[in-house]
Image (cartoon, rainbow, N blue to C red; front, side, top):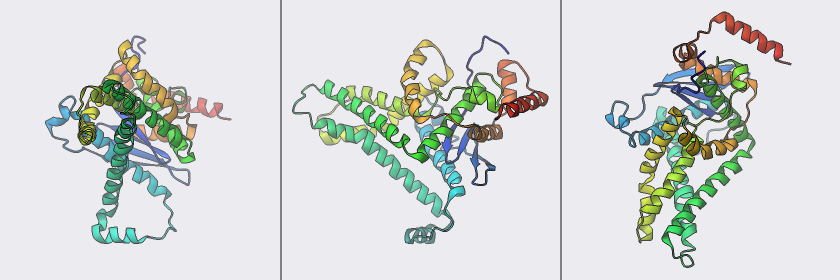
Length: 334
């Protein structure tokens, strides 16, 4: 293996779901789930995304808006699939469920998922964009500097976000989700460091990654501080509307930053990535080997990591080597 190359961009990304991992490579994605009986179920599908053939998705600062929407849609789809293995079969159908199925028939679940996604997005806007403004405005009689008010609002936005992440991490189910999140990162780091994708190598890899969604959201907070600092209006209603209207712009800029971070490792990139990597200490936890096995299954369903290691790092992994690695792992297992 060439020692000159360090971390190399692989193009794959993922998301933790209920008792599993979603991994995406180009237009193909796989969801691997550890079922209640202990077996790993893997579903492979294609997702072209909204406006997949549009040139808008190639324009810098515009493509990030569509990437953000695609990630939300695919994330919700993957989460629904994973949760289907853990639904309570004895639960009775509610009146609302019956009404939805009667009205939308086979598309009832998709419509309900869309409503939930829109509601969650609106709630996030209210909590992280609008609420900090209203709280900060309570001090407008005491603080006359508009610049200082903008800084206070931005800091409050970040504080609310960090407290939110910290509070949900205390929940048992979310904590387990964060462990799968760690397994997802470890798999990608393992590959991009040029290491064969084995349980032992993955467990030794970092659980933090510069292209993480957590880092993206933190960039959203930081970019919003800069934009709201320079873009100001006097009317309170217009201030709120501008904060909402600028969300696509903020998402587009944040996407370009996170995209750069995933493809470069220079000093400046490491500096701007550092806060997001620190925050990932809250959103990623150390997985166990069974979780790593699920993550590996998701990767291998959509990504030829052996060919990637050969083309990127210049060495070949054969089946006999993998057999020896598996035997070594079994001997180390207590």
